Amino acid sequence: MSKSLVVEGASYLVTGGAGFIGSNLTESLLAGGAKVRVLDDFSSGKHENLEPFRDRFELIEGTITDPETCRVATAGIDYVLHQAAVPSVAKSLEDPFSSHEAGATGTLNVLLAARDNGCRRVVVAGSSSAYGDTPVLPKHESMTPSPLSPYAVSKLAGEQYSRIFPELFGLGTVILRYFNVFGPRQDPNSLYSAVIPLFIRHALDEEPPFINGDGEQTRDFTYIDNVVQANLKACTADGPGVLGGVFNVGCGERISINRLWTEITRIVGVDLPARHREPRPGDVRDSLADITGISQRLGYDPAVGLEEGLEKTLAWFRAARPTGDGAALV
Ligand SMILES: NC(=O)c1ccc[n+]([C@@H]2O[C@H](COP(=O)([O-])OP(=O)(O)OC[C@H]3O[C@@H](n4cnc5c(N)ncnc54)[C@H](O)[C@@H]3O)[C@@H](O)[C@H]2O)c1
Image 1 (cartoon, rainbow, N blue to C red):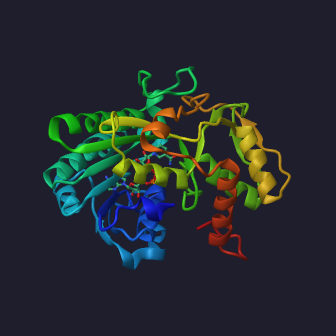
Image 2: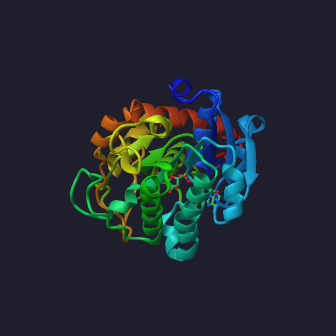
């Protein structure tokens, strides 16, 4: 898939390339023969995420909050895949300013540097958190945003800056609003871990997880390969509404947290009822992407569904898991 989507002879910058999504993008770009540079401050990213292909790309260890670092990082680059952010609602409640600096100021720095260095396009990671808790489903890009956390506000600010660059500054941008992404290299051991790596760790350890609330809340889970595809297609798509456009990246399917746990225990081969506890304040009840826009304008096709994605993710976790002493994953 990825090979044909990589532009021959082009150079790519992945900001946040040491993170979960960024390292998968980097790996796919390298597999497609691209020249790749990574910019990361390793605040949540890890060197081990890049280890398997470390000698095949250029690494700049630095922060997008520094304009000069962004200028150096975007020099000679054709396409920027901008993933760097402090990607957690909970962290943003503890430290709103760091979220703001990375999501808003950092994104503006990346955009200005890409403009000044004549980059062809910047694809910006947005977030479905922009929609807030509006009951309307599915979420369509034309809905009025309603961010509920400093994280969501900072991501939306980054989006809004990105939207005005084609018209005002002649820099092509595309914004991708990711729904719940999962796959290999997603951290299962952080305080802020996403639900799928957390559930996989619990299932492998045969330890029931806690589900917040009744578990009937739903999410649109999206396997990482679909997100890679969306990014690569966003680099080259053209036509009305593409530049400065905002596009949902999901599968267009709602899965409840209860069903997710059932699926994971089935694939792992354990029979383990989850425990329930109080709902987490501020959690969105339901989330579902309308993917008509991205399918029509970018030719996006979420080829890997939940079950296949879970199987691939589990295979990776099993391979990465140290054997014998029950030590922590990855
Ligand atoms: N994972 C999801 O489900 C999801 C959903 C919606 C949006 N997103 C967005 O996708 C992007 C990637 O998220 P992820 O899940 O891979 O998280 P991650 O934490 O694994 O990756 C984020 C990366 O950005 C780096 N970073 C943070 N601040 C930086 C800075 N100031 N300068 C340079 N690098 C910095 C981190 O070290 C890390 O490597 C983020 O922009 C996030 O907001 C992710």
